[in-house]
Length: 110
Image (cartoon, rainbow, N blue to C red):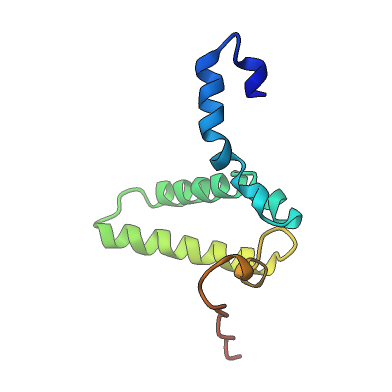
């Protein structure tokens, strides 16, 4: 695609040449993960939920209150993602790509 643009818009073609490896980095993952990595929709939804919940509260008294609220939203979202194994990647499925040893969360006592 960059070669097709090179004649008419050389600056764009050069930008595409340099950005290519970063833009296509997700292609190094297995095909099952690519579908989940190429989109920012889950992140946009999460940011929208944080914005919605903070607007409901209105004025937060200090930075620690903001941290607690956003932390609670992130924990809640993590729990939702954990049970939706077909939609998002699990820790087990991405473990082979990291340098860290596998980690599993403790089960909750009933």
